[in-house]
Length: 451
Image 1: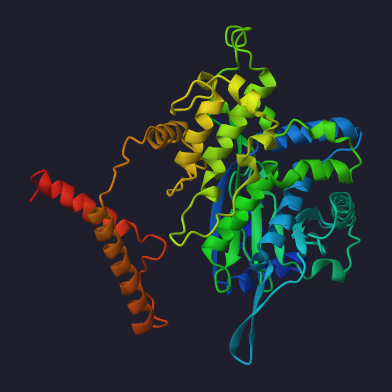
Image 2 (image 1 turned 180 degrees about the vertical axis):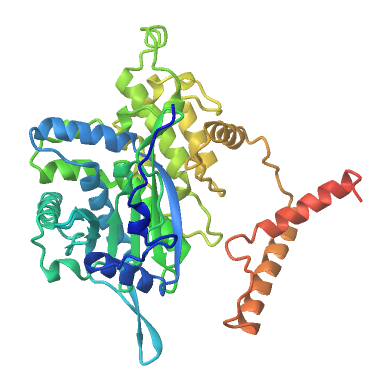
């Protein structure tokens, strides 16, 4: 059955065959002006898929203790962004041109903008961005109070002009409407805008995509990437993040004592059965969960303790790589069976496996593969890394040839920088090892008979 749609009057409204332009006024006109102005900012965007099982569980426990008060995910995410901004303050800098010359203005404090959807009196939706000033120096309780006050005043049209200026980093949360990833526009005067997507399940693990869109004139991709990595670490419980939150909210720390140590990753296999927790396997469930978390920390953060500097400087390290961070003693390490850890390393217990974890993930090669979305790819890479299937020992001559080729790559890169200063060109920076890899591939296919 076809629906009959009345047409009487439609042509009169449209003005015959041609549509009548409708002027954009008021808030809509201001939005047009802002978006046009944003086109003057050259931006780039970094994306990171981060596991958020820890954040989901910690928020649940905090809200159980706070009831009837509630924390939103955005409270925790926004505070983590402010603290990460303090670690990477370049993200809060902004670009200005003075007398025709470019300048960067560094921020002494992290002023965090919060994108809030509101409606005008005529029902038209629009966005306001009030600013939490000095968000990085507020304790969590003071931050939540400032956050809630700004949002409430935004929705009741009581913001002042001063509330809307000075944001260095801005947070927008399109995940509340189901969007998984977003590339927002950056306004002049800002360093970066962070967008958080909807939390979703991938291979049984809760994951959220977070993006950082930044002013590429003063911020580089590596800085943006490190900033997002710090946000992920904090939301994963690093630096006693949730313990500090509990202290600020005057909640007993016991409420958040079950950090990521007790949340086994989805790829850790099924929960231990009665057979695996029999008296013969004297590991407790808490010790097993802590062991799983320790293994995961090595896979995720082992690169922070890897010896990558040929001159021997000390790596920054990572507290989550120490058994004590998960409440594991030497006796506890010896009680956790290795077959529950799903590792491809030799050893009967976690005590045996731990030195192999350190050798594999904190040696002279660093790995970062846990951000990969595909469960199959991550599993294959872990197996390859931990078994050393493709690790080939090098002779002294091999090492000398490799060093000579890497030196040639670096020398050529420096020559290009001096010879073509300010010119657009392709760069090998950050991918130097690709050259000897290609050289080795060509040699191998040649030996195999390719012509």
